[in-house]
Length: 154
Image (cartoon, helix red, strand yellow):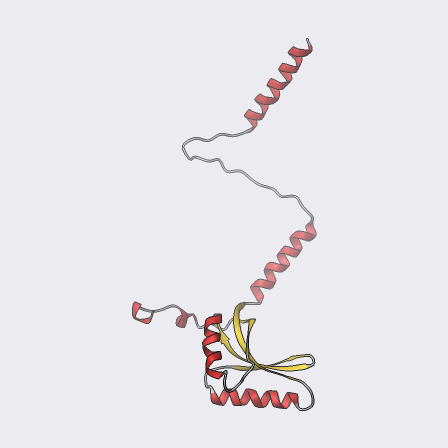
């Protein structure tokens, strides 16, 4: 009697499992609904992360650090270097960043490390000890310039 009852229970469990699954043939898949239950704080945190990413638009890039100055008059020396770079290399942007206790002078908005390296070779004799730094800076992309109008622009 126990054997028959065990067989019946196993068979009914197997049949109910098969009946619960939905098979489709010929690529016609049924649509289901997935509901994820979790902590509300996690979903709020994810939503805040999405909102922040939509507000702050940045892109990865590279800048060349040409000086890290500290001490007396380091701020004025950093801004003098910045002005000298702007006049010597028109079209190349220069930045002074205060990273306590140093004033760092960085140049360029390079999209790739190779672009930064090519420019680094131009200025290496004038500014020895320069290094390439990874940066993330706000997007100011001219999309018309990025997308070629014809194959001749490539």
